[in-house]
Figure 1 (cartoon, helix red, strand yellow):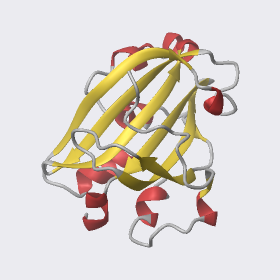
Figure 2 (cartoon, helix red, strand yellow):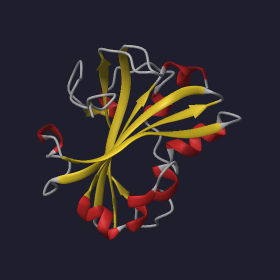
Figure 3 (tube, one colour):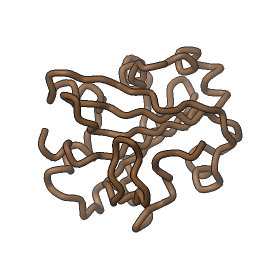
Figure 4 (cartoon, helix red, strand yellow):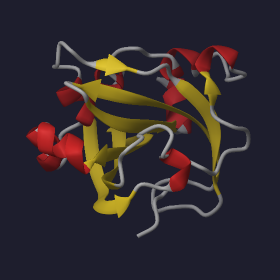
Amino acid sequence: MTAVFSLAACAEPWQQADASKAPATLLPWLLEPASLTARLKAHCQQFRLQLLAEQSLPLPQTLQPLLPASSLCTRREVLMWCDQQAAVYAQSWIPQASQQRLQQLAALGEQPLGELLFQYPDLQRSPIEIARLSLPRPSAEIAAGEYWARRSVFSVAGAPLLVAEVFLPVVETL
């Protein structure tokens, strides 16, 4: 199954967030150092996470530098909804070794990944990178177009995983 967004479909290469040309209304969201889930929940009455897909796949070559020594991963795709509007599409790549080390990652279901990750006191995060991703064909909930996204690698107890979040237009109104 093809992902809703390809993390390689960038108008420009991924770059450090401080070198951004992102709109001022999105910068606080793109640069949020804490849990994006918690930030979304604080800005809406009803929050819901929709699991779109979860499957084991070889890590794409374009992502190998971010998760070296990882071959088979679980790609997890979710939509985060605020007040009945799709706000953020998220895609995570969780190496098999990380799932074995952190068993909770294997059975998240519709629990937000951020709620789990930010509970760990030894959580580490790489610098946030941003890019504009292209969605050439619409999905059921997302119109075709270009969207600002961010990505970073989280590590808990030496278990890394990649998280990318794509900000949909409603975020600028929250």
